[in-house]
Image 1 (cartoon, rainbow, N blue to C red):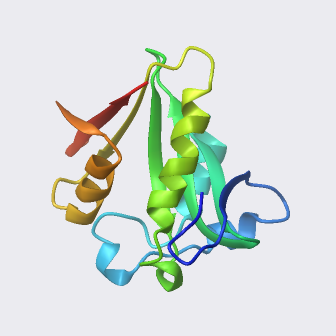
Image 2: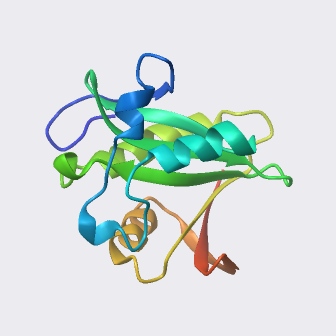
Length: 151
């Protein structure tokens, strides 16, 4: 996948070589209503809760974001913790990240749907996910609306 500037966007495991760069990913201050101050919080969820799995988002060779995924008890996959660094916003990285992640999840054994949730006041997230084919399910998760993309 390419971002709007033509850089190759790829997903990489979080390793000893890149975890600090991932942990330091920080969204715009205006996004703090919907996201933590740093991706380090998501890395800790992945490390300590044994549910979520983190990916470093790279644009060419630079770490520019974080995204995590999980497999639910029903076999569906969930996307969470998508953060693009403030300095990289507006370059199509969230869209490219999702376009890389969705087929990767779809290729996992037993996959039948990709789900995610977001604050209903997060209009940019709602637009992005709708443009990728996600539809609202009518369910809520911790005060957020749930959207699904069937396989």
